[in-house]
Length: 216
View 1 (cartoon, rainbow, N blue to C red):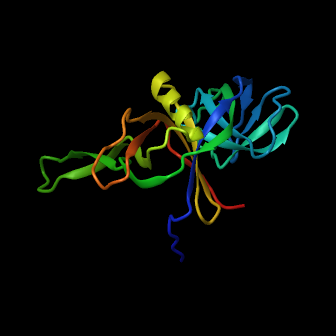
View 2 (cartoon, rainbow, N blue to C red):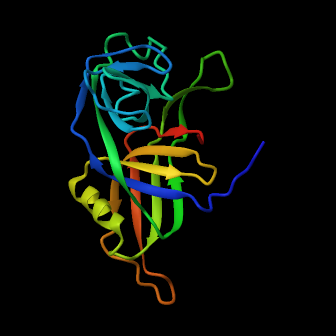
View 3 (spheres, rainbow, N blue to C red):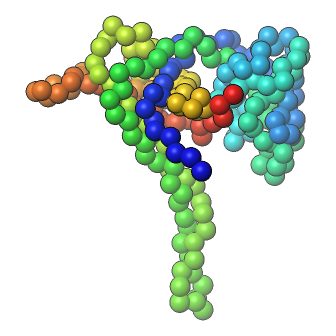
């Protein structure tokens, strides 16, 4: 068992993306291997996936086992063919790079992700039953000290303006990383409370479940 404090965690937003690169095949494996001629990706590159497989679509993954015409999706398991129908996962990937740190975070919160249930009961029973259904969408909020000269501000404001998802990376103190694909927004004006630091709130509305990797 172990416990770590979040102190020292680093949040970053990707500010550059490659053009989409199609993959013409993908395996049902752990990790799956995508076939893409002369893709140019290296191990450790961060990709956003567009796929016919709903659970893989919009995921952020790292490249593993890169070869000239193929690459693996680290941390992904597509062996369950009832979910990942063979031959149906084709799509494309984009590489995210040029990270800008979202600095001066004074507070952060998360909401959503709770399991929902369908409640039902049989006529002959006195107690109801439950079956798991969907989970609530996940939202992260970051309160940041206001400073529009910081490099990340332009990237966040651009994301707020065009309403396209962005890749974000959280590096924990133990070296583990969590990747998010999220719609990003920011309050247009800082708070103005006497004797309190002026602050703005960044909201991350996740487009897919996050991907977590252990420290190297």
